[in-house]
Image 1 (cartoon, rainbow, N blue to C red):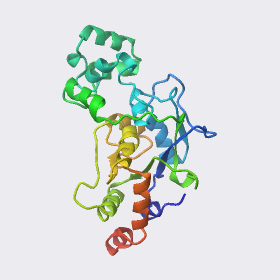
Image 2: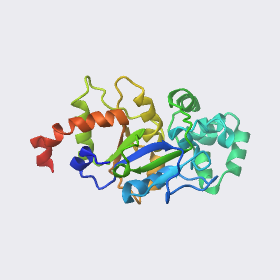
Image 3: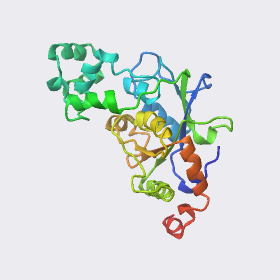
Image 4: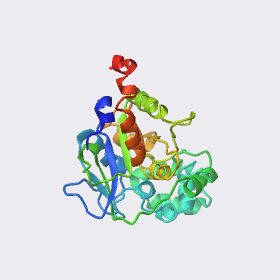
Length: 269
């Protein structure tokens, strides 16, 4: 699939698409079943090198990706459940409801997770706020298809309809996309930049926006944990700008004679 927006942006990073399917693509990157990893490390290979990645309910990498990719939620079942995650996402050991139980979770965790579990990721100021986020605010979907596929937008076929189209952009390219979106939307709140994991910013939050009367793009890759896993592949000044399929088509139409053919944009090139 050719994208007029992508041709105007001229990004060094591939725009990508997230799709659901019951057919596994051949020669795709996929985590090993039961092995912990950040799915963004595989998605970074799609973004930077044009690979294809696939995930399912046995190969989802980490609990955050279960929600991020629309396969339900693991925050109530994995690694001790909600009590663990509310402490993990806030202040770690010092914020645990049951310090002894939480310490047992730390002791059983893989070595690379123990320090983060002990100190906490500190993405939320309190365990109560953390629990409210993953229980009430993060949109949860459980689509029936077996696989979630991430591949370059250029490889999307005519019969396919992605759930999410993701542009990976530097500040100038992001400015162009925000201007393009603002040119067709009323009001000032043209985009959203939610708290969460980077995979959720191109998945779950985009699924939610697809259901809105006025869907908004989701600004992402602001997840510091994902940054740590992708910094050797994706430059630190890049962010994601993810849109539902129908909004992508609307933006593509405006890109024909909108901001990208203006003297201001052309001069900046």
